[in-house]
Length: 431
Image 1 (cartoon, rainbow, N blue to C red):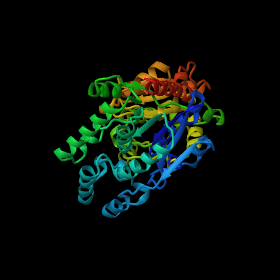
Image 2: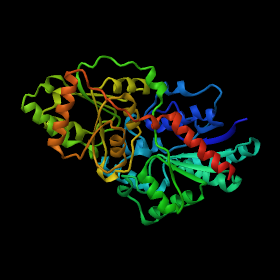
Image 3: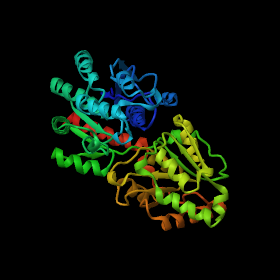
Image 4: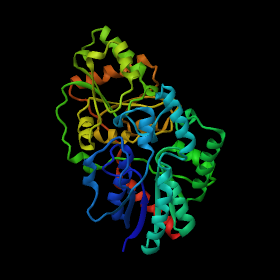
């Protein structure tokens, strides 16, 4: 008989985006390694993105418990007068707030909704799951965040039941890039740090998605933290055939914030245009997702607007198809947050398309690209180096050879990563 693991996650289909994919895929393969997942999630979450294509990965036998949550979403929307399609109160970035009303609302969000806007999910979930665990045998608990409210639910259940608990962090807590820009009072900042420390020290195991988070959390926890990266599912790529690549298309998938704007890339392309390089006749710049006006303006300022096309969020299966049919995939990382590893990098790897990276060269994402020989890494201002690489890529494109000769990405398969997760669960449930 397989062991049972209760997985507490806010993000679950029909939610879309990277946040939901990690545990949908783990849940898909865990049964192969002797663990039967039980999903605990919300029935009425306010998801900025929805994606019904992820439902195909959920077995009909999988137990999914959905409970209602109250979120201050509509109050926030009324207060800031933002449209539903542009707002998720748990993902507000202060650098995108320009009005006094937004600043006030961000102050309220920062100091009254701790650890996040899903805090009102905590107490009802504890009450429900306390009863559930008394009536149903479970061998371990997993919480995944953000939102870090999920960890506080698990923390309370750990205290009540003493069940083995794995806390999984997809992003940092108090060192997330926008945390320092929150309008926190001293009291609120101290509370965040206290809750973070309690979760790190109370969980039987901590997993993170990258090396930098491992080092940070180990220094706070005083014990080992394990890295289980995000990954890709081979099944998603077997069903997506590539089309012939007719354009020298530079493709970026997902949110494109102003702070990751690859200014050196646009300058390099502008130089190629001014030199009438043949690559320009085939150039396409395709951006999919939420695109910062600063990025668009930078492209326009460099005379590249005619090559630009922007599309909204794509369902997961369509996004994979778009990635596979790119000439070059763009990965842009914020230099000051070099240890963040965005989930899309692993699906980039699975496409076998070359990656052009801009950001910190000693960051986790850069190391993954170099280790797998999937592309080249540059700082944002290395114009001549980026330009030279574009010329090399275009020459390969012209010869029909624009494909990675070596791809060392196998260890980032979700099948392999789920085995690592099962090993952690086996360890904490038997120790």
